[in-house]
Image 1 (cartoon, rainbow, N blue to C red):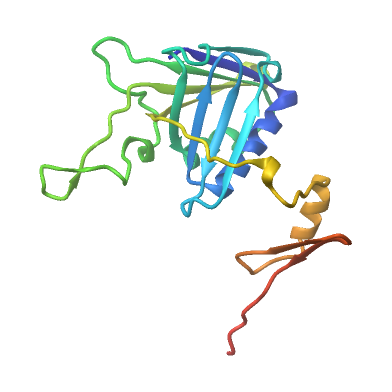
Image 2: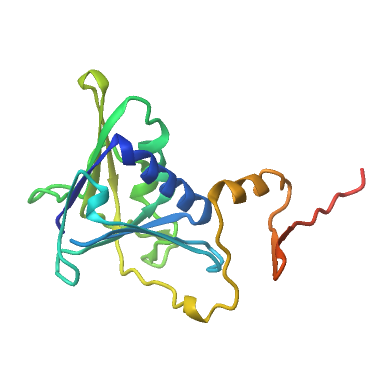
Length: 219
C-alpha cells in the first residue's frame, strides 16, 4: 500500500474532533484510503451504532493514495486508544504528516516506539491447543510526525492490522424520521443530561422531545 498526507493547523482540529468522536463510540478505528477519499469508521461492541467520517483530498495540504479497487488500497484497523496521544495536545502544532511505512527486507514488523497494546490483540486464536494466544503479525506502520514551533518534531509509530472493511446497509431514504439541527443546540441539550446511560428522542410535528430516566437507589 502507498498512502501519505499532511494536514495544516486550520484543519487539524477538525480531524482531531472526528477521532475523538469515534473513540466515544467504538474501540477500533477502521481506516480506508484511496485516491478519492480518506475514510475513518468505527462500530460499537453491540453493533448498534456506526460512525463514519469522509475526508476529500481538498481537506489536506498534500494527499496521496492508491486508486479505489487497486491492489494498493489501504484498509486497516487499530485500537482507537492508540491514536489518541497523537491528537492529545495540538498547541503549537503547525502541521501533521502521516505516512504508511513498509518494513525493509528482512526487517521486523514495526517500529520500536509502538504502544504495547498494538502488538497483541486479545482476540487472537489459541496456539498449540494450550490456551496461549497467537501473536498477530503486523507488517506495516503508520508514522505520524507533528511539526511544531521552533522546528520541533514529535513522532509516533503505530502498527496496524490489515482487514476487510464493510459498511452497514442502511437506506436513509426509507427512514421515517429525520433530525437535523445546529451542533451547539444538541450539545447544550446533552449538557443537562448526566448520570444516565441512554436518552430517548421523541419526534412529533411540534418538535423534538429529549427524555432521560434516572434510577436512584435508596441509601
